[in-house]
Structures are given as C-alpha cells and as structure tokens.
Length: 295
Image (cartoon, rainbow, N blue to C red):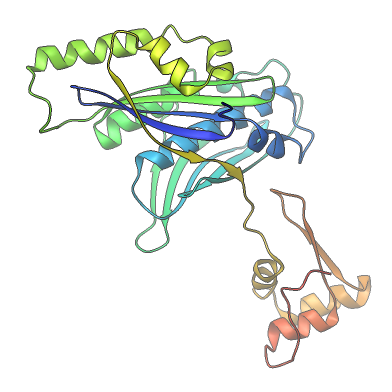
C-alpha cells in the first residue's frame, strides 16, 4: 500500500507519548517545480513543509499554520503555509550563490517565526529560537520554551521527497499509572530508538513498517491519517483586493501606459490580468462585471 503525501498520528500505549509521521511526495514535487530552486533551498523548504504538516496536526483548530524565515543575507524569504485540512504551499526567495549552505548558513541574519491563524479567534505568533544547527533542533527548543512540552523531531529531504517524525511527551494522562522514573525511562527509550532512523528509511518506508521497526519493543497504536495536497489560495478576487489598496488614479495611469496590469502568485505562478473595466469595477462594485473571472 502506498503512503505518499500522508500524515499519520500514533501513540505509544501505556505511556504519555504521542507522535506524528509524514511523507510528502507529489505535494513536495509540485512546490519545487514552480521555481528553479537550488538543492540547498529545496532541502530547506522540504524540511519546513514536513514540519508544518506535523505541527498543524498537534493543534486542534481550523485555520492556517505558517512557518516563515525572513533574512537580509542570501535567504530573503522562505515560507510554508499549511491549512488544518492539510492543504500545503511554499515559496522561497534568495540572492546569490547558496552552494554548500546548510540550515545555519542559509538563515544567517534571519528570523524564524511560526504563526497560527485560526478562522475564528485571535492570531498567534511565536519566535523560533535559532540556537541549534538544524530546523528540527530549533523547533524542539520552541516547544520546550513556549509549550513546555518535551518534543523530538526528525526531518529528512531527498529524492524529491520530504518526511518528518515527531514525538511528544504529554504532561498528564489519567490512563497511565507509572512513576516519574518509569515515564522518563519510556521517553528516553523511545527517543533513543528514533535516533536510529536513517534518511533512506524515513523517505522510503510506509508508516506501519517504519514505526514498528523503530519501536519494536513498544506497543504502537496507529491512529487516523490525513491526506496532504498542494493547495494555493490565490484568486483574482484576492489580487483585486490588494490593488484596491492603491489609489485609483495611480492604477489607471499604469493601465493607460501598459494597457493592463498583470499580477502573478508567488506560490503557484498563476497569472491574473486586470484591464480598465476590471479596475473600475474594483473601485465601483456597482458596475456589472465579475472581477474574479480569470482572463
């Protein structure tokens, strides 16, 4: 059975340990096919995508989770957006030669931020500390500091795939009756076993086989799985809303000079054209015209 573009939850029975596994295949390919990314940028985006999928699964909300890096050196932007129902998109912008640059090298003079934007409720933003040499390590620090949750994360990218494994030690479970020493032993044993995971295994083995091979001494219960897909939320209507923030006279001046305005989504490369009729409709909705119709 194939398990491409899937996120799968699991728990270790008789322990407070829960986990998440994800593999991205066609979704990852769809992202890196949109732009001519160097291998180093591909690796960063792949790990960020896998991380975003897993983190969205740990949150019970409807909305959007965003992991974004912004810098002033070679990496200008790397952003991944994941919806609660696992719609995923990503994009990166860079300047200069990034050959041989690892995570730390790419994020020199950069900020890494996680944003949770629920459909209903308050937007939350947290800074991810950049004190470790890998994205996985930085995210582990984030959970330790902001959520007070013991968390270990393993990320992999290669062969046009990306994968992730996450385990967390939940602070309280009424179903587990063990001493703290025994609980700590459970955590140490599970994370030690997960540390043996190779990139080839991570990218090439289905979750049932992988998790049972890793945690062969544990009673692993697989829970629900979610299908992951490439999804871009861009539309002509959204771009029209952005144009409406610019003075009408300025927009019409461009139209007069160029004949139309062409916009392009940075995530999916979809182009949208606006002519004079579109512009008048944006600023005067009473005019009978559908600004969301692609041209």
